[in-house]
Image 1 (cartoon, each protein chain N blue to C red):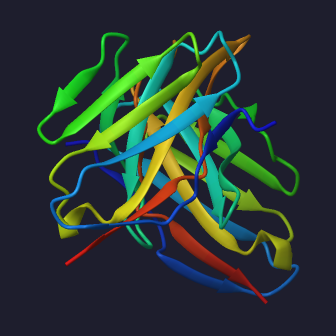
Image 2: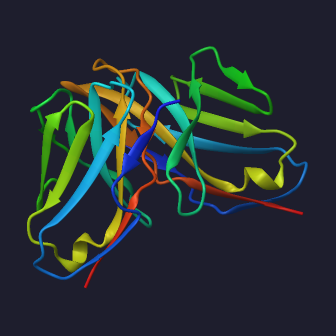
Amino acid sequence: DVKVTQSSRYLVKRTGEKVFLECVQDMDHENMFWYRQDPGLGLRLIYFSYDVKMKEKGDIPEGYSVSREKKERFSLILESASTNQTSMYLCASSLLAGGEETQYFGPGTRLLVL
Amino acid sequence: RKEVEQDPGPFNVPEGATVAFNCTYSNSASQSFFWYRQDCRKEPKLLMSVYSSGNEDGRFTAQLNRASQYISLLIRDSKLSDSATYLCVVISTSGTYKYIFGTGTRLKVLA
């Protein structure tokens, strides 16, 4: 079974803090993704990576950055947290680049920015 | 217009009922389709892929209609445990492939 883990289930941070969300997958997947999920808006792609040290912007990258130094680990960084970044953050991975691979999700991190 | 649209529901159905959801997509170049299930406060999990010829997995049947650009999910003999939000996912290729998630349809199966 694919296992995708995220470093925290719940986080509370203050406005202006730097926030690190970590994601690890144990199935040697090429692709990794960061989404946020908000009521009525569904899942929105923040960034994705199809290889170590590679990253691509998704639909809403503003205010975020990512790091992929190792294949199994994909980090999402909020440089200066703001209240509108309060959300559920979901990491996902998929096996190969090229279109038809299903994504496997981690359990999510609920982030509250005060 | 959203790239992928779903009726948010909720669909409230009694146990044993048959229920169907549709999901429409706007990009005719979309090539792969999935249904995911998401329980309250949990992550989405793959329910089934959707193939052109239609496919069935137990009580669940998925269909694709390329001409009208929609996919459907039929659940027969609904169980209480089927209560969840069902997300449709469309993979489109415009340069790079892109997963597009619908906002989900909420199903409540009532005893």
